Image (tube, rainbow over all chains, first blue to last red; front, top):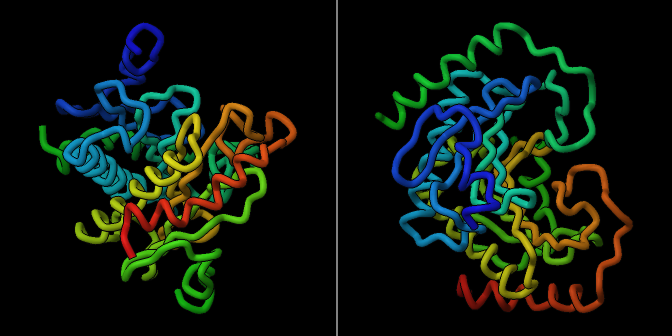
Length: 139
Length: 139
């Protein structure tokens, strides 16, 4: 896997939090402040390739990230997805959605519904995510 | 919730398996034989609105469905997603993906990459899913 896998070779974004199992990174997507990815550290393709302790540990982080994003961003809806067609290394997208965002109510991968116009206040909220993660997940 | 929520008012598809917490339904999507949804029975918007026992129970079913689909469909990749922008009632999409499917390698919600041409053999495999779920999840 190592040589060709993006998530084996790069962090995949600025790291907001990590433990031995996984890291939480900020996704650089101007339309979606607050968008995070939770990336498994070891290489595995599918959730069902993980043992029970790994599944439980990873999902606990995913749901803590959801809670931190909800508390920080005040999203209208949260979206969770583990796809990996392009990068088949287990990772979760955790995405705050807003009624006025570029794709709402369709998934962020669908055709845009409107021009993006992210309020400054929403970008400022995203700056507090790192602290909100620390409060939920510890150091 | 009740009156206006699709998943409070309808099963959401033919039920392949169920317990007190959730049901697994077949998604009627000709491009994607084997596509299942796992729908929480009670109304809740977000995974982080569930208590720990509900989260654990629901994810155990989601991952068992992933395993059943992998074993039955021999997918190239599995996709998992909990979005709910249109129907904000907790449900998981569990989707077998193939290199020749209509959207691969983009998500099924993106613009199609090609005309769909699902092999008959793939449709026949999907007919065995119900049995594969029973083997993993019991009655």
